[in-house]
Image (cartoon, rainbow over all chains, first blue to last red):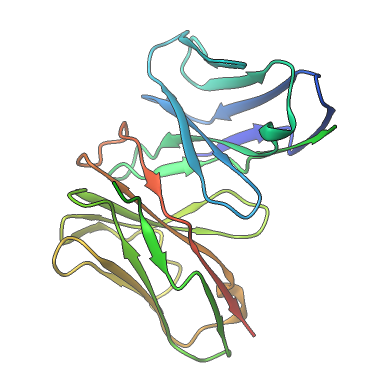
Length: 112
Length: 116
């Protein structure tokens, strides 16, 4: 079945370093969404990418959607301790009514 | 306005007990989703409602799992004869649009279920 894979599973960085997580889908996606889940919290929507090759920025966060619409990345510049959490990418399940298939997430820890 | 709320936030059940988990979506939201999130994993889809109609229950792991949304607002996920492998966080999400794969889903805080 359709799969969404994320790497790395864990990333430990020093505060101020950059961070990137990569997302790959087994199928072409109509869109991809990114969520952040703080420790003990619930997924919070960050952004949605729809167009092939799309790049969106939110302050220090840069999101890219691949040309083939099968991969995506999230890059954080100069990480801060507030960036700690697990970042999930999610794509719509093409075989259903629109539920999301989530990757397993990349857990980011930031050392001050 | 208020976000998605879920209750209880934590539930400890003895193996074999039945549990009921409640979700109050954002008012007026048409679509409601239930997900199960195991420790260290991403959320996994359980079931989807459009108003009161359960249009997709393909993710429910067994016939012990049952969900309803009788009036198209509040939803209840019921697990009968709980097993230890049911221990997880159960997340509810709602959306203002009919699910088609492009809409933003707003998640509730989840119910953390522990089956002993």
